[in-house]
Image 1 (tube, rainbow, N blue to C red):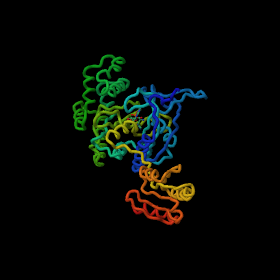
Image 2 (cartoon, rainbow, N blue to C red; image 1 turned 90 degrees about the vertical axis):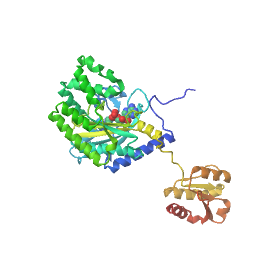
Image 3 (cartoon, rainbow, N blue to C red; image 1 turned 45 degrees about the horizontal axis):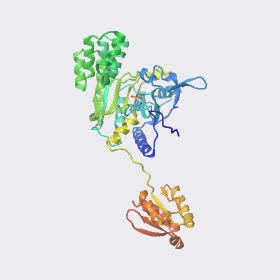
Image 4 (cartoon, rainbow, N blue to C red; image 1 turned 135 degrees about the vertical axis):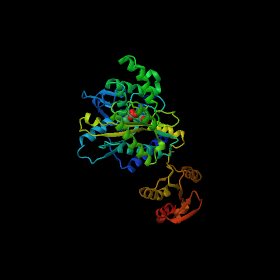
Length: 438
Ligand code: HAM
């Protein structure tokens, strides 16, 4: 008989997998709320045009897209950024600024499959709209870091690599590059870590051999790993007013993150430029410190996108964390959640007549928020006691023929192994008292 499997890159979530996902979503949501971000959502299917020439060639080539029955060209969302720009752009004047929004949603990209990358994955997106200065980056990078620390990860486990696409533009312009050439060089820088010198092939195919001075300038700049080195490099290349302006922004950003006590999580790294086409300023990516996994998160400033999608001009910064690499890192560090399905109370039931009395209590206790379980079929007492112990419940309520004849229910503390009888009318109060005392 044919068996059906999930499509390549798609995942089933068995209860143990869903427990991990639920923990991840819970801590993301809790952390975002503690930073004053509010939650939104958007449709999973969008007009194809929303992504054409906005997300960049790489994502466009990975779209799950088709023509719907009404002849519309549509795509499953590969990312949240264009959608959230539409929402915010449409109400830009009515929303109180700064606008601090987050979402947890599923995305689809037809990617080559590899560890930590699938074709269907979740992201936590957080974005700040309406704030042109690095105060927005401070808030978002702090949120990104806290979204990882919430699981028990520390500065030894991950870091945020920080760079600046605007500064790269100024730097390459000073090396005589025009905009198409600058975009091509940045494409190469994005691929340099993975492909080495082959990354420059695309540039050379379009614009001819790279002058040795230009190539060396690019390699020197992408090798910068500290703010001191960045200042020095710009000084020696004769910093323009544009570059000096960017350095002032860097000082503010690094100063703010330092005051929040987060410097150990942040690594200046001009090798990061991001593959997405819309970033215009600071860009950042989070990685595991051992460098064994693909990126945990990525983001940056994109001041033009809201305007380009039809809304009014609105500065914006944001990032997204993916669930897959984070789950791998949490598994590696033993920080993943286990299933928590232990009931509070397990009822041990004699026969059919006793079941009626038990059912009345079970309903009442559940309605009051207690997790209550019982055997669905009649079972020997010995087996039921074992099931109660295996379930992880804190107390067992025993509905035996003998107990009910005396008008009581026996309550056993499964940890302390003590027992007491309560009149049937007092069972609910006895359970409440037990849990309130602990
Ligand atoms: P991104 O770098 O394409 O940025 O994705 C952010 C994160 O989503 C990645 O670091 C990774 O953890 C996860 N991710 C991306 N693709 C996959 C995949 N195929 N499988 C598993 N995980 C994946 C963005 O999407 C931007 N829209 C982020 C942003 C928000 N920028 C501004 N606001």
